[in-house]
Length: 312
Length: 326
Image (cartoon, rainbow over all chains, first blue to last red; front, side, top):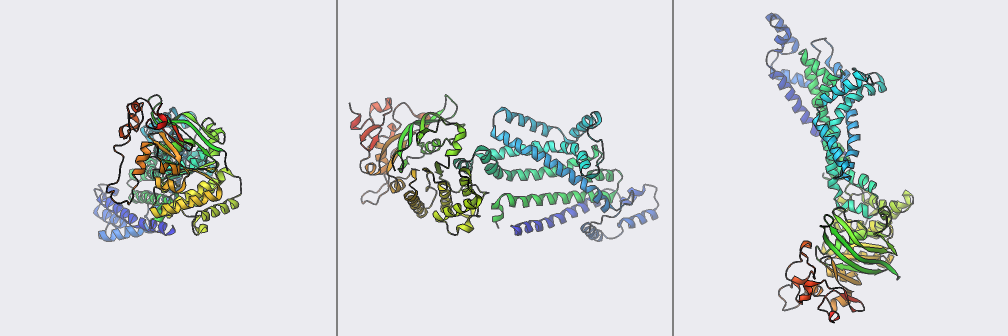
């Protein structure tokens, strides 16, 4: 089993490499000379030359590429153009908030989704099933940024139950701050994952081993949660991985709306001020996030389904 | 070892919407004494699997529905029992083995856990005692290295070994009745013989009554004392195993016996009953075997023949029998 985990980790390395290369190419393909963009139209050639040297744009492309790879590997993203802060430090400051938002929204979403899916599957065709379907439909239909704004206006501005912006200090305060944004992201996740749980469970409930579980005297809750659900979770885990990734794009808007610190906010500020090192770092971090989430899901498979580990 | 164990009367099961349902099991009845081994034979679609499932009320509802009848097990009608009481009987008093050993075990639980669960559900003994019993059961059904195999998953077993695991699980709580639904059909012939041998040994050792469902008369002849022949959801003949082979009373049973391949010289083509059983939707009021029957008479189209006493140990449902003549 551990060999399988190790091989999955090794598999992730070429992916990372490819992602970094794509980021590099994308940054170079941006129209215009970053030095000119930064200094404005009235800069003198000498100023531009100096800026190009500062940005490391005066050496051949392959050297820039190698330097970029090396910097990415050592988490050295240079300094922000705007406030000369170390970009790595900025990432270090912002990343925990994004991870926190992702984890809390995923937990909330999953905790709501799996029981909902189970109830829908075991009450197929009955009112409960239709109500959960309606809930999912709403989850799919309402964009997360819109829901976020709605929640913010209702619960923070009008009712004053939740903070209007910021990330909070200390665990309890941070959870208090993360709650509303996490709900906004969790809603669509719950909609998606509960549908997935329902269909997957319905399929598993027809399997022979479920009948065996009943035949040996298992009561319904045991049959469903102990026998059927664990088998039904495999496709759900895949879906959960996908939905975590979609949270990342969602978090850009949500962090912005709720005025939370985070990689998404950092990225938006970076784009507004044309802060290239910050943009580059933000994209690399997001890309790494994707690779890591996929890796975690792959490893999770091995633990849920013993047959996956047995293939090798 | 006598006394009534199971008394099935008028058991009928329908599939589909109420009122428009298709009757797949029609007023089936039979008796079973403690210690009996009864074989139920019939071709695919004869309702034998549905019958075995309905004894434990395991017919999936919907679409299935038990519409009438009674299943008396040791004097208690299982069909009128509250549904919440059934799990206490399943696995404890009546256990079941299924046809597909590949899919009948949970792929994500070790076989040890699965057998252990069967004990856990019905007996309050400690984890260590449970484990010891599981290992004993695994050895009993002939699984070598029980200690190591306890933590193996079903996909690490061969088909025959999985069926042994199923048998161990079914017998873990020492049930009084074992329903085996085509237990050997999915297995190789050599493995089939081993599993049948195992069932015979266990029957001798624990005096468990066995209801063996099979489409294979050879398998049934090997282990059962009495046979129930089913056709299109009805019992058409019931007899002691020797009587059935020597003096089949129903034309369908005769056809079944003639279809068994033999090496007798001169018989070049294998006998087959002409035609195919009618779909459940196409059955009329008469005998379902009518279209294929060599002894058919006009009366067979009008009414369903009742089960008639042929001899002390034999009953059959056919108007062509001497007993049917007025």
